[in-house]
Every structure is written in structure tokens, then in C-alpha cells.
Amino acid sequence: MTYLYAIFRHLFVYAALFILVVYFVEAQRPLLRDWFLPLPWIGYVALGVSAVIALQFGRSRLFWCCVMLAILLLIGHEKIDLSSEFSRRLPLIVLMILSYLSCVKDSGFSGHNVAVTLVKLFVVTVLSWAALTYLPALVQNHLSPMYTFANQIAPGLNAIYTPLEWLLVGLALVTCLLRFIFVTDNNHAALLLGALLVAIMPAYSGFELHSVLTLVLATSFVYAMLKDSFNMAFKDELTGVPSRRALMQYVNTLGRKYVVVMADIDHFKKFNDTYGHDVGDEVLKLVASRLNKIGGGGKAFRFGGEEFIMIFPRKTPQQALPFVEQIRQLIADYPIALREKPRPKKAPKRGTGKPNQGKTVKITASFGIAKRSSEFNQFSDIMKQADIALYTAKKAGRNCVQLAKQPE
Image 1 (cartoon, one colour):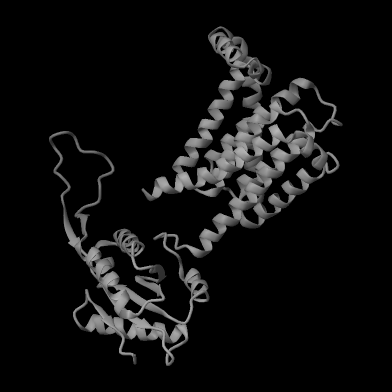
Image 2 (tube, helix red, strand yellow):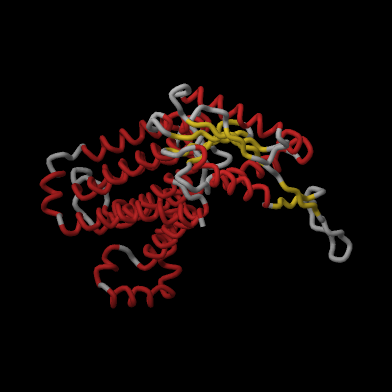
């Protein structure tokens, strides 16, 4: 459910941006021409800023997208004298390059990686040009029904792309969409938006309209890089819950009344040594997923190792206690199935292999609760009190919740 929510959340943001851009380009063309015609450099500046940020954040794919879009914008300028055939094919070639970039990983900016990337982009360009040159004669008879169908829907469709070109556009967009679904983040959402806007560029011949689309793309690239970099800085990569840095930022927003809960997985080191770090990582993910469901307005953070912290704004320890108990019980009741042996590299022949049966174990966690008071008004002091209560819970047999001994 969380995965589907992430997909729809990203799609909603970028789809809304795409619809808004198409609306303005269609309905407000005179206004956009008045704005952008006197500023022919604005698209290049936006792409330049986006490219510099991509260099700083190591987003090589978005950097090369900016380069491709700058070339596309330059060719689209009315002062550039190039053959119409090349100008017609260029958006399709850029679209093929975008779909290729969406399927690879960021490769950095070392000399070797830049040279390899340039060679790969050149190969994609040559293959795209060859496909646009030689495929039409081979598949013309098969695509004639598609030409008729497009003409029945809207005669202008065939003026934008040929049936083969529509097929390639659809293939590129589906590739970007599938890649986004499998790797859902802002970078792939921005690449998908880039593919969509490049695909509709041939429908708008005006250079100033291309500048509008380019400006939107550059802005979306910057947003994607900053958003993902923010997530990397403020979210724990393993568990997905907010990190220690996010905790310290969140503390600054709290008022004079809140509760701090320290949580620690019982016997985690022994569990890790017995079953391995991979299983230990799964345990951390499990505990984090349970803590992330805390009610009562609580918010969970990974503090470090097997320790987590929960904050309850505007709550007393007695008010937070039932919610902490509920989470403690959820963790203790969840069975973890373990394999006794690693999965074999090759599947055994039918009838000869023995089932790789595993055993089920359970984990528990201990909790310590402390509140902000006049005596302990600094977060570090409150956290120490919660840690003392957590130590008391460990001495009491673990798998329990203890309140710090603080004056009312």
C-alpha cells in the first residue's frame, strides 16, 4: 500500500504540472509569446542552472538531459539554418535518449564515465536515426491501418508524427513509465515528465513555446534533485523512517510540552551474530515499520543502530503510554520466518531436493518514556531520562515499557 501511495503521489504532482503546462500553452499562447519572445535566453539559463545543480549532486542522467534539451532548443531557434528532416527527427531522437537514460543508473562525472556515456549516447542517436530512416519502408504496409485510424480521430495527428513515429513515441513513453513504476522517485518522475513534454514539442512550432516547455522541465529537474537529496539527508536509507538529522530539526519545532520515548531492540547484537546482518537489517525494517504506525500523534525516528526515538507533542507520559504499549505488543506478536540454509544457486531436480525449511522466531523491544519539565527542559537532558527509563526496562526483563522517575 505504501508503494502504491508513493507512485500515485509522484504521478499526481507531475501530472498536475503537465496538465497545467499544456493548458497554458494551448489557452494562453499570446500571453506566453509576450512573456517569452523578448527573453530568448531564459530556457538556456534554466537548463544551465539545472545542469550545474545536477553536477553538484552527481545526477549524471539529468545533466545529460539538460544538454540534450539545450541542443533541441537551439535547433528549434528560427535563426538556426538546418535541414527540415533533421529538425523533424531531433525531438524523436532526444525522446529515445530520454527513454534510454531512464533505464540506466547515474554514472558520475569522472573522465572515463563521461567518455563512456558520450559513446553510448552516440550509439543511441545512430540507432534512432537508422530506425527513423529505414524502418518506414519495411513496416509501411503494416502501419497503414494506424495511419487511417489516426486520420479519423484527428487529421492533425499525422501532421505531427507518422504512424511509425507515433509507435516509437509510445514505446519511449511506456519505457519511462515502467521504469518509474519499478523505481519510484522524483528523478524518474522528472524523466517521465521530460519525455512527455519533448513528445509534444513538435505540436508547437514557436520557439518561445519550446522555451516555456524547457523552463518547466528544468524547474522539474531542480525540484527532483532537491527533493531526493532532502530525502537522502533526512530519511534513514535502510528503514525509510526519518533519520537523526530529521529528529534534531523536528525538536526545534516542539513547544513546551512533549514526551520522548527511547526504543531499543532486545538482544539485537546476539540476533545479528546468530542469523547474519541481512536478517538483522530485515528486523530493523520490521521494527521501523511498526514504529511508523504509532498513534496518538507520535512520530518515529531512527536514532542509530538498533535504537529508535518517538516524540509525542502535547502529551504526558500517561497519555503516550497506551500507544507505546500497543506498538510493543505489535512487535512482540510478529513472527519472523528464518531459513536454516541459504537458497541454492541452482534449483534441485524435481524429486531429489529436500525442502529448505526454516524456523520462526520473535523479537521484542524495550521502551523508556520521559517528559519535558522545568527541571529537564533541554532535549538532550530529556533523552537521557528516557534512556535511564529504557535501561530500567532492560533490567526488568525486557519487552516492557518504563516511565522515567520525574517530578509531576
